[in-house]
Length: 257
Image (cartoon, rainbow, N blue to C red; front, side, top):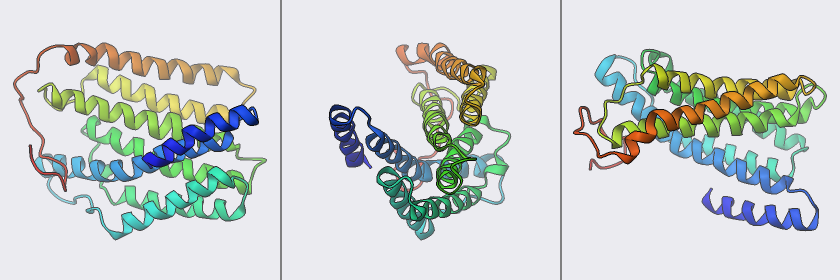
């Protein structure tokens, strides 16, 4: 995925220079970011969920990363690559829809329904949910272009998966690395709600392009979420680390520090 990002950057500039547009480069770069979420998010989401459930709610735990996950990621990456270069192909649409179903199954196997009491864990599942949502919308747009706008899937990936997962991980990392308790306060929950609503409104705006207010609401919520993060956590990042009240076990597959 990292090399794909490099290729997408080069292609973006080449397309813009010679054609005046950069559709392939943008889809390739966004697809690479989504694959990174599938890989890294596919490890940390079930791992952090397992840690919290083992401590707070013993019982059903997330299914460990395995061959099903590898196969799903491989199929999804192939579909996103095809989407970058052949966005109107029926074969691309079929692969994307299949990948959406498989990623939804992955998410369901991680016991996210048992994390409602902890927003820091729950937001990871919500953020990842935009991956199958984006895949499904991108695939359906190929078969139903008159009903599903292609831009809807793009915004499910960008404002949904990428932005939500970015805030979810930044928040958790800031608390953990500054020695604070892994707990979301009211302000943090408001940031999470704002970014999720921003994604939903942005997807909705794709279906109602004449309703500019929907787009403005999405933009305002997106800005508010990141400004909110900066206001709540910026000070923590420039002050000395506190003595840790709680250190979460490392996620599966990584040695303890």
